[in-house]
Image 1 (cartoon, rainbow, N blue to C red):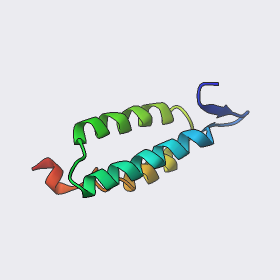
Image 2 (cartoon, one colour):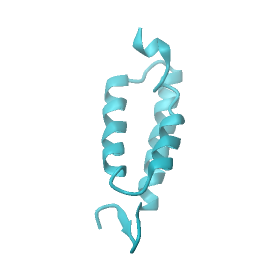
Image 3 (cartoon, one colour):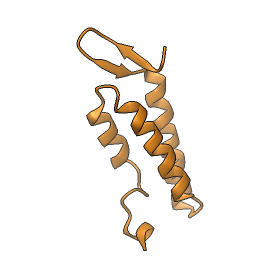
Image 4 (cartoon, rainbow, N blue to C red):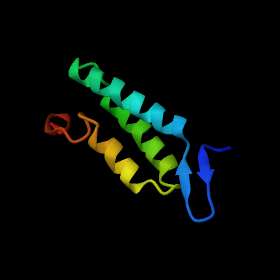
Length: 79
């Protein structure tokens, strides 16, 4: 009931949780392209979701979500 599907040998996130993060990433990428994204707020939200997801067997999912964020590893974000 806490956003996980628990099986005998492993734990997964619920499907709606995955849909929500992909929707948010798509929105953040659009805002980034328009130069309206608040990087600090988006980073905090992504880190919060990562903290929730890390409790399940989601290494590849987390990696895939972070790689789909255009703004996350952009050099201009750090200048």
